[in-house]
Length: 353
Image 1 (tube, helix red, strand yellow):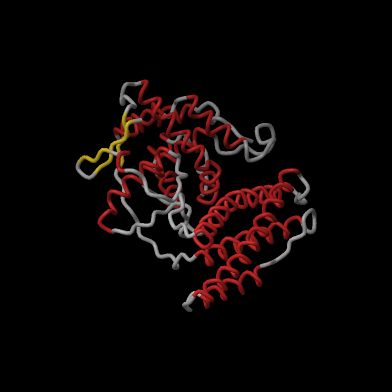
Image 2 (tube, one colour; image 1 turned 90 degrees about the vertical axis):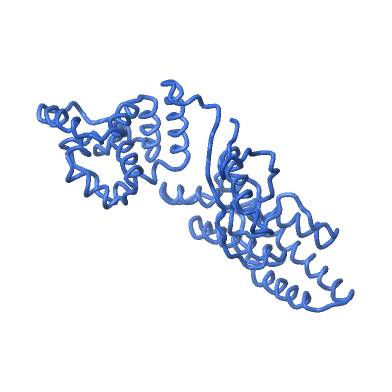
């Protein structure tokens, strides 16, 4: 059963809390006051209550929301693993008092990991927003300007040909639809596997690309036309799968598998726009001769990336990219950004909010 905090402390805990308070570090005393914020605790409580519809009324007592929040803060500040967090809190009186565990049992590392995953990125973002509001209320910051320091990390990808990107997209969509079929069986739209035919078209295009001449170019366009048609059929099939999951035509046999099914639907909904973008840039380049397509994708396996043609621009592009992540909430198009977005001072970026 989800709880907001532990029950009233006993007399021994009150005595030890006084002793531990004198041993707390300066940041702990400040954090202890901030973490008493009720709206902050309500965010954690509501998120933990979403794991099971009846968890607020039934079941064994779970780790309270207040304890979860303080444990995650301590883990982040100390940069500990869950195993180290469990060991240190068990053995340290100050940590026990700071996390409001007191004489209660410390959750094991496996439970701590589940609690950390239960919060998720969205609730962490809301916690950060609430902390900024608290800081503004206490006049610690004015909240008008944000500073960040970031850079670019290089990764290796295969050469981004249009045919290989189409093959990657259809392979991912087909794999997700096969996983959905394993969960729901033969309900709704029947899956048709076109990967073998698509693989043949990709190999034929690769062979034709090594040849020169107008005749070979026309043949390659015909193969691309077939590949685009097959990709659209796989894309349309993925859209039907997503719609049928949403409408309830495709359903799992139990609640746990239904949650997995919803996750697969989210994967489909995230991959279909990428496939659409690859289709647009392929038709523009192959059939109309346009190479500068807005939002061009260079890899189907990277959701956040920039293609740097000049390594000397790495720092500047990294700063612009970091600012775009802030402005768009972490979901940005894979294209270059105007340098007017930032004001550079001593290698850092400054963004007016």
